Image 1 (cartoon, rainbow, N blue to C red):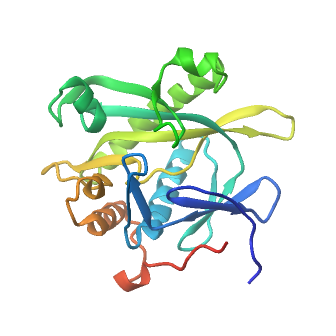
Image 2 (image 1 turned 180 degrees about the vertical axis):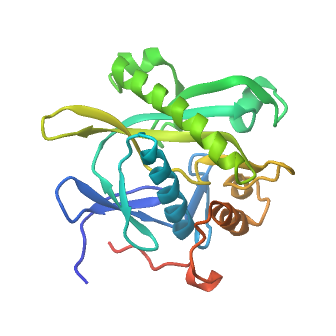
Image 3 (image 1 turned 180 degrees about the horizontal axis):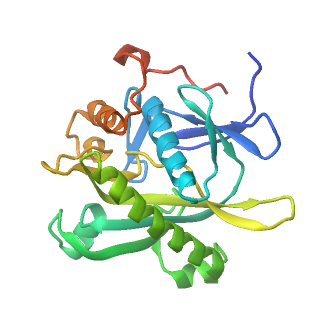
Length: 255
């Protein structure tokens, strides 16, 4: 097998040079991290499940006209995606008080927010991904005003769509994180598109009846049953891989 050139390795994924100009291969790892990389572990099969879940959600978003970097799934752990210039801002959309929001403002976890709240975080592991304001973002040149307008409009549209989609399978979308990139076409026109992934790694999903956590909080809080929770989300979405538990552990990514 020909060796591929690795371009970037993050906490949960590896990016390789794609087969055609302007494309990348996105490989999903089983590695798990929390608390700005202070806690590390492995969730067996997570990469396979997140690949399927993200493929499903990105495809649904494309069908309603939301632009994404996703092109197609290649195999159990890899996707073909468009190469984009990543905007170093993470947008978090919150519908229910949980995690750091509940801690910062002394809210009881599970409190329904009066409206969806959008927060901005500077994408930097070294700095702990600090929360920032629009003033920081535009002053430091991380994104322009038009970029931010596009990102917020897309985030709210995605939130409305995903709330309904997850509700239909008995899950509450508590909050989620989005990343965006700039896609340049042949005329050097720029389009802001959804990048990275959408999965239980970056969504808080609770069972609508029991409030049982079905996401990476099970890893963060040592609740156990992490693999089973990811599998249950995939099962409800109808994308559980046709493989047994022993088949979900993948090989090491090629260097």
